[in-house]
Image (tube, rainbow, N blue to C red; front, side, top):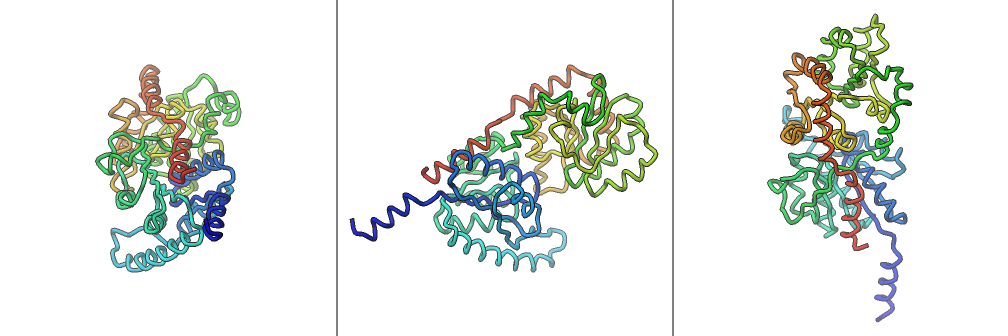
Length: 380
């Protein structure tokens, strides 16, 4: 063996594994991505892990807070209602593609991972063009456009639902589930501390209403209109309004003096909230559903109508078909949501059926399984 080949082989043997994880835009993409990175770091502590996100999106804040470097691409989504505005979007996409190719050349990852979101497209296309193994993590039961387009260049596609062969090549699919925040499992043994934290009583049911970090207009309106019914029922309420609606809702309830009704824009101790919740009202995001399954929570889902391909409705229906959730459409929420929630809270047997069914759908070690696949692709 000549000296140049020998030197190259030695460099390959001593080189640290390198992984790029791309995607984001919402917590539903970011937190699973961080969970995958944490699992990789645990299995391969010496690895270099780089995140690639979209400029000015929440991943640019959340990822560094989790201890990982991130680089932003000037990419954004297409506006389907104002087509002329997409001229600028196309220009930003071209810039993002150029930057993604440069990143791949300079960082030289062993594997590129896409978790969905604007940045996944340019980054995984650039990686596939350089023959770098790519892994896609599809969170929803109805695959997004970006992941469907990227599937041809992917070596492995990790999914959270059965029946994804209708979107992806069967031989590439691996059912892993969605990575979730494992620290939430602590909530199962924290009811006493949670009661103290929220100042609630142990002998009355708790309804947890979530609208995501930004909030959900229809859910908030449904609760506001039925607040008197909730008070009369004796049910205790933890209501996360989201930051967009908080001030408006607090102004509307300025004279409310009921310690059993807690209104907040953001729940910092979600583990405590889950510990107390007898029933959760929520949108049907894939990440949230995976958390409910992990914890075995009874849920009433109101899918958002403002998402691509109406995938939240498909997520919710995947549970409803297995008796693992109750669903109410967004347009019916104001009329039906709270009456249905209060009726369910009066049926302990029905709540237990929902808990048992959703628990069967949990795949608690998703991040570890995905990390194993990434390391196989890297031949580690």
